[in-house]
Amino acid sequence: MIFDFDVPVTRYDTGSNKWSRYSRDVLPLWVADMDFQVAPVITEALRKRLEHQVFGYAAAQESLRQQIVNTMQERYNWRIIPADIVMLPGVEPGFNMALKAFLKPGDSVAVQTPVYRPILSAPSFWQLQRRDIWLNPDEDGSWPLEDITWKEQLKHSQALLLCNPHNPTGKVYSRAELEKIAHICDQHDTLIISDEIHCDLVYDKQKHVPIASLSPEISQRCITLMAASKSYNIAGLKTAFAIITDPEKRAQFENSRLGMVDSVNIFGLIATEAAYRSGDEWLSALKTYLQGNRDFLVERIRKELPEVTLHTPQSTFLAWLDCSQLNLETVPADHFLNVAKVALSNGNEFHETATKNFVRLNFGCTRSVLSQALDRMIDSVRALS
Image (cartoon, rainbow, N blue to C red; front, side):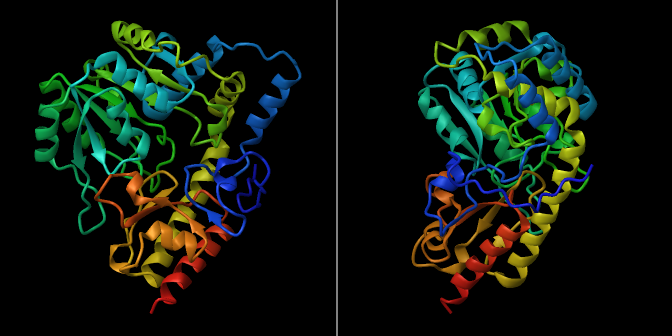
């Protein structure tokens, strides 16, 4: 089947957060939300469920749990059982539940900075100390694991809030890197809470490795958080899941709902099962298109905005742009919004002080929109010369 991701989809007047925040003369390339129609198998599954016409409280059916089990085995060679799965309304509630369940006020949690705001902010919600592990790129554009930094910060941390693939840099952790991280955590009895929501969107024939899949022993100290939401563009259906193989940890995690984390959207459950069961062909085509967008973006930035540093993202549909050398009179996000009429995520969202001259750009859009946005950004900078 052929999927055409160049077909524009009008999202105005649909309740889209992405397209309603700014005026209509602004191209929104900010929040991590793609502009593509979902896989037809998802639409068909939702249509069939709509025909039932009763939409009460939902519970995950055994078929969904078994499909998640099958997907983990097929994609990541990770053996889990249906009982390991805890359904959630989102990954963000999941890692906040984990921090609340397993840490106490005053404890420390390590995070990889820069990192997207929900992870950056989460420790403060529970009176935890945040320990930053700063990601620094090599000259070749890779993001190496600096053992000394990880060892020092994890030595003093009760938990690691891991983001893999990483948002906003697009780094994919290799098996060898994850084994090093897991070894350090094992040495210091550090809990691993792993946000792996972008796990399906990796490029250049790389493979995502869930850190919990490294061994049964490592799995016992892991809370793994995943969803079909980013990969299949169904984030608005508010469905995710945790995989927790330790029964005691799973029960403790469930107890931290505290009346705040409710049941899951019935349509999200249906869409997730359809995506994992029958959406592989669509996902493969999407990844090819997104990798093309990524390459188009990198080439244009390097040729036409060489002052901007962009390391090719290995995953996600997000690019992390260092605009420090532009020497703008205002922060880059404000410049591109007010002058170029392109909305990007402000670097300050990913660290309080160190990333004000960065922006995050969402290339999960049609090539036409991406090209228009880059035209505007490039013209806005050239006009300053």
